[in-house]
Image 1 (cartoon, one colour):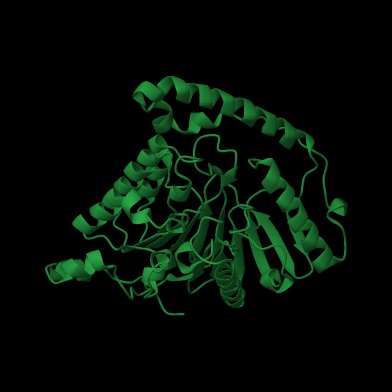
Image 2 (cartoon, helix red, strand yellow):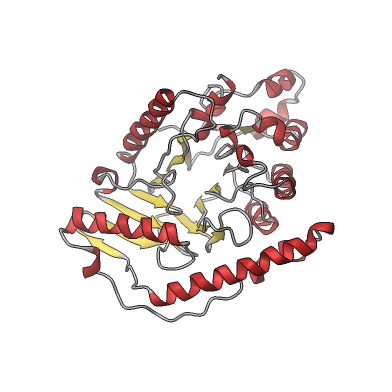
Amino acid sequence: MKAHKCKVMPSHFLLQMAYWPMSFFTRMKTMNKISFKPVWFDSMGAKSSATLIKTPDVSVLIDPGAAGMQPSFPASDEQKQRWYGEAYRAIRKASKEAQVVVISHYHYDHFTDFEKPLYEGKLVLAKNPNQWINDSQMGRSEKFYGNLCRAFEGRSLDEFMRDPEQKSYPDPMDELPVAREKDFGDYNSRRQELLQKGRKWFEGRAKKWNTKKIIPELDLKGVRVRWIDGKAFQFGKTKLRFTNPLFHGIEFSRVGWVCPIVIECEKEKFIHSSDLNGPIIEDYAEWIIREDPNVLVLDGPMTYLLGFTLNLINLKRTIENASRIVSSVNSELIIYDHHLPRDRWFRERTKPVWSIAERERKNLLTAAEYLGKEPVILTL
């Protein structure tokens, strides 16, 4: 697989390319040490952000999962199923090239349960299923590791489980000073109510983490599993760094936590944001800006759920945060895709982000556009 090379730009870029100075194209250098391949993304017709990364030291498949589009997506069930099948075939093919498989969290558009060939012979670097996790993902992880133990060892997961450990868990808002101090005007009182409810929900989860049996890291016949939360792994000159668990969306999001990945090789850097939903939280945007990657895979807000699980206040936050990221980083390429292309009006609803990219001549694309295609939602 060759180092990434931009194959297409959307029309709003093409209209202005003739007027851009040559210095812009000089700055758009491809990475030499890290190669990037989008395996499947939402803009291609199924929910996913599966990505294959290669360096001279290691090949990494990030989030090898896919899910069919929601009922509101304007395509037939048969077409959705075809895209879903294509996504899994692409993921299976990519897994044959990977030595390491990363699971940032346990949503089915981010991991597969269960296909033995997908994980056989791999080092699986996965979100810790014992803490900083909601109930549904905890259940999915137990099922997944149970399948892993049976397939590779012929034993049940219960034979590996350890007794619970007592830990203290600080208020997550202590790690979010920018979001914590943000003035929301008339929404401040309602926001404080929601944060208090969130803290109570979090305290309930923490009690559960302290009482459930622990799934240990696994060394099975044919696969190894290591937890990634806040850790780093070295492969020659390549380092894989993972954040501490970050909220999947808003503060105290009931859908849980995720662990984005940073891949570094010599002076090159790649970031896959997993599911930060925008990001909604200002501190997460500041983290991405500080990292300043060469290539950034940034998931967007769930605009197709606007008025349901996404309100206008949090949409505004995501637009401000993504705009600041696009304006501030020196990334040669930003893939802005996951969640967004489930909605026909995703460009209109995030227009300021695309406008800033155009004005500042930043290479902001969906994965489909990067591959020379139009997002399928815009073809229906």
